[in-house]
Image (cartoon, rainbow, N blue to C red):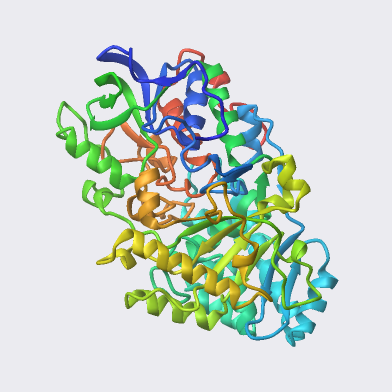
Length: 570
């Protein structure tokens, strides 16, 4: 269960009539669905949210996975959530910045690279320590160029989609913008990385931002790596990574409260079984089967899940087709995730081989293990051949170093810490022909070996044990994400990421298309991570879906009270 308390309007489906009506039905009570529900309910729409779990939040939950530790079990960053949207929603969410960007041990040595967000001189000294003095300036210049991308594109994220030419012009118009678009948007990311940064270690640090959740190579012609990289570096206009104090469950709680106070009805333990594009949603709860009729249906589920639900509904009952750049067949394509997440509770931080980097500093940002540039490419090749990469590239973060409030007082006093590990290049295809439990054990063992290869002591000696004597470690594979969160293939973005702009010749005839939430079915809109700018914990999928409806159908409260109307920057 999440840390949130059950609200009066977040109740099981039992007791509701077999057929009911609403202006809008939201499928899925994750953060994007709650954002849309809040904004639409405030604008006078009747809104019902259907959530299959017994709690809302989706991937943005805190759970007491281990006694006394409320862990952000899935997602953990909110750096893509615009402050303007938090203000619009009235959420008082304290975001905790990270002083240190990253620490990367040099494999086989006692050296490491520490990137300090607040001290460029210290970062230069760290480059010098690992023998890469020349790369310090190159590394800084590279990220100065990504800052240009952020400054140009981030202000567009809460508006209708700009076209490619418009977005390109915004980048080119800024100081230092010459060539940025071509390098980061038009050409494979590996080209600019290899041209800009010299050492294998520093190149790897850069490339990791292009790979979390994405099974791509540095030179992949699909440019999936470029799109993933872009969203990692433009957040809030700076690319800084922030975490919510108290964990992700605080965000889910605040959003659920806002939706309830706005008048939205939240129904939990209600699994949607079919969608009719004509305007009805069938679901099953503890009280049996029920149906909701609605003028609009918002899908806070992956496009592949939506396609399956529409197929189950017969794709009949008068559902009008809508202009869409993606066909129903494209929606049905099952994506592939490429990461696993491992949560641990430690009795203390492990010792490092590098005596110049105290563990409480090294682990307070992103700790990279075995993520050199060449090894990342080799690891992808191994995974493509059906093998778990060895050593496994991964990165860790200790939330409790930035925010001790997620630990019970007794754990804080005794020096315990949480550790979150994300693996790279562990695609869903690795499960083919493997027993799930056996694969999970193999992956967990590979994670521990990879960590141990860069530590001064085995991580196993630092892992806490629970009341039953079992080590406090859990591994969530792509299959686990698919089962627990309904993410096909364990893809954390609900599918391949899209550019945050429309192509120059792309039809934008409808409000849904202009906001990047269109589907092949006129009454059905995306409102989750599968929308054009919805990947990550941003709320932008929910915001865009609400805007699309309110722009197309001015409601009873009038345009001046719609979300964002008349506000600066809109």
